[in-house]
Length: 126
Ligand SMILES: [Zn+2]
Ligand SMILES: [Zn+2]
Image (cartoon, rainbow, N blue to C red):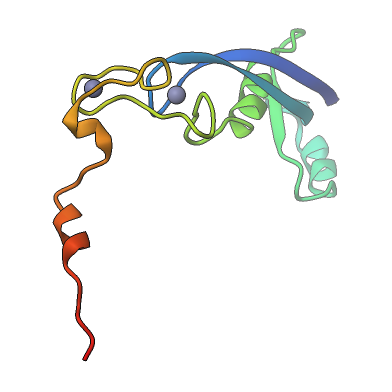
């Protein structure tokens, strides 16, 4: 059995920077070969002749459970590190405010780092 289709879903993600949840539209194409669980050896032989790059899933009984097939293809199209937007400013390290919504006056939020003093360190050429 060959199942083909498209899945569109809107999932809720948590932004990796500001921790705010945002909707993320996912689209996946499904093309999956299915064979009955515990199919006979003759069938298995036929399957071996099929292209190698096709994964076979199994189903049992009269019912076809597409949940795992859909789930798998959706997982493949998910981002590794979801961000609400590419230029998300994230949370302030000082007060935890979402800097997409408001700027705070924390001294920590001005981008100072312990290495800033190195910027004033100038090597003089002679
Ligand atoms: Zn964000
Ligand atoms: Zn702050």
